Every structure is written in structure tokens, then in C-alpha cells.
Length: 225
Image (cartoon, rainbow, N blue to C red; front, side, top):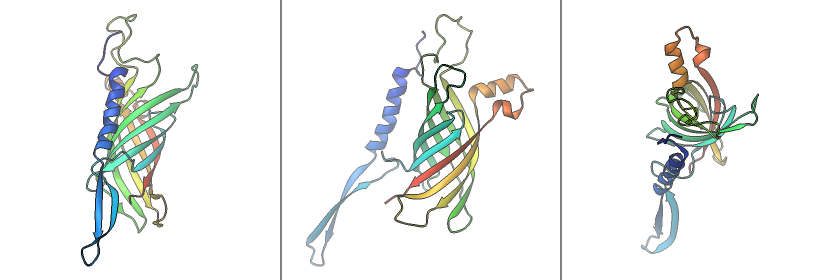
């Protein structure tokens, strides 16, 4: 089989480095409290968060979206208004007419530039967009076609898909400050991938349902203390 930069030997270390960078950016900060005479009376220790930390800021569950019928994951929000999010998601594809169910892994980058207040608890995000890379677990999928196929028989990978999406969100802020989650977001996305987009360009007769997909999702935002 042909070698590839995106084979399994490289994909796992890339994910490890992503999570290590999250961990390395979190540092411990000691704070000393003094009384009126200047005598130290209390010392506290807290985790100082920078752009990324190992602890996620959101949990995600999604229906469809070319990353599994049902998928779950975690995300890290950052930016001045938390407009950026990096998410890692695992999904399940039922067996349907094949011999077994399949697992997918997805790395997604999301950008949500605007948030419009509706009332005290609800906000509307008119645009969410981004890119994601998805891979299917299993020996029957490949990054490069096996040697048993002619060199130009398969010109694309069956194991790796590059996707783009656009959608919207509506968020609800939970009133209680004692709850573990501070908010819930509902979203939908319209998406396409590299293979479907190429098919649309080569076959102009294809309609939207042939190269576009719909995803519905929910995000639970963890309260930051």
C-alpha cells in the first residue's frame, strides 16, 4: 500500500499534540491574602486558563452531519467573545446493510461571529460556519488505494473527508448560578464535503439534496468558575 502523510501512524500523534497543547496552556496560580497589618492569612491556588485548557467548555451531541447517525464530543470555546470553537467528536454509523456498525472521528473548527440578544435568557447567532475533517475507523477504508487497484482507479480517499458547513444557533442561558451548566445551544448546519462538491461540479444536473446534508445538534456549555 502506498504511504501517506495522513495514515494512522501520523493521525494519532496529531490528536495527542492537540490535547497536549491544551494541557500545556493551563497553569497554576497561587494567590496570597493579607490582613490589615500585612500578615499573610490565607493562600489559595487556582487554575489559570489561557486560550486553551484541557477541561472542555462544552459537551456536544449531534444527529447526522456525515459524521455518524448519532455523535457526541467535547469542545473548547475561545476568543474575545468565544466566537471560535475547536471540537473533537466521535460518531456511530449503524450497520444498515453491511456486516457491522462503524465508528467515525471528527476534528471541527467553528466560527460564530455574532450574537443577537432576544431577551434576558435567549440569544440568536445568525451565522455559524467552519470546517471539519472526518475519518472512518476500519480496515476496509483507506487513505490511498491498495496496490490491487490500478494507480488511477481510485483518485480519492475512502477514509478521510474534508467538510465545510454553514448554519445558525439559538442559545439559552440557565438562570441558576448553582447549576453545573450555564447554557444550552441548539444549532443546525448545512454541509458538504470534498467528494460531494466535486460530484456537483462534474454533474450540473445534481440537486441540493444530492450534495448537501443537514445536521441538528445541541451544545451544553459548562459554567466557568
